[in-house]
Amino acid sequence: MGAAAGTVSVTVLDKEGKPVQDAVVVVLPSARGTPKSALPMAATVTQEKMRFIPAVSVVPVGAKVTFVNNDSWEHHVRGSAAGLAQFSSTGGFELRLDGKPDGKPAKAAEVTLDKAGAVLLGCHIHGSMRGHVYVSESPWAQRTTPEGQAVFDDVPDGAVQVRVWHGEQLLDLPLQSLTVGASPARVTVQLQVVPRRRRV
Image 1: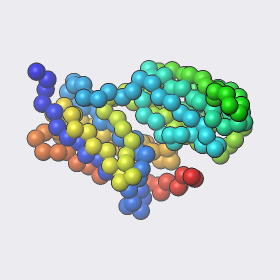
Image 2 (image 1 turned 90 degrees about the vertical axis):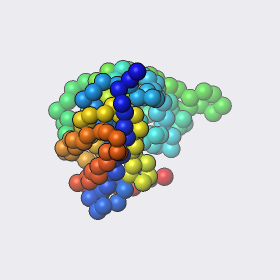
Image 3 (image 1 turned 120 degrees about the vertical axis):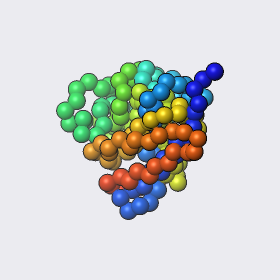
Image 4 (image 1 turned 60 degrees about the horizontal axis):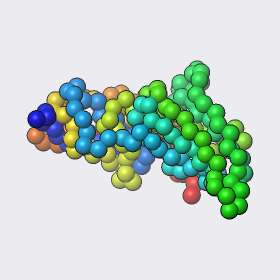
């Protein structure tokens, strides 16, 4: 029989106190355990109308991410460390994806992400294109809803730390410490920025 588990509820607000969608919340329990539903070991990020869709993906370390170009023009996708690390980090990846010919399958390429942390996606040709893949070392990780919520129902009882990440929050926010038990553990985390609205 597994250890007792409880609920962790996290609300993410911007600098003005409004809910933030697509922030990444990672729960790091001190006790060992396995969530009921694991993060997918494969994800797809599509380039469409000069955007990355979804804008933010959350995957575990070792996941394979497939990039698919649905635009009729070429994209040079690059991935590099996000946040302040982007100015000093080496490595990352670059993919060249030809445009999708009419009536033919879209061009695709795959990468394996084996280092935890946030990856900034961009395009060498189209500077306005931005997206992120968050590679989580914990299986308890998800994006916030439009209401700024992330709820985890199966976190092992005991001490946990909560990390909140957002692509426009360059400085890492301090970890939040909580105790999971019989009653839900709740925390509200406020960003130091107001994220820009994503163009539709």
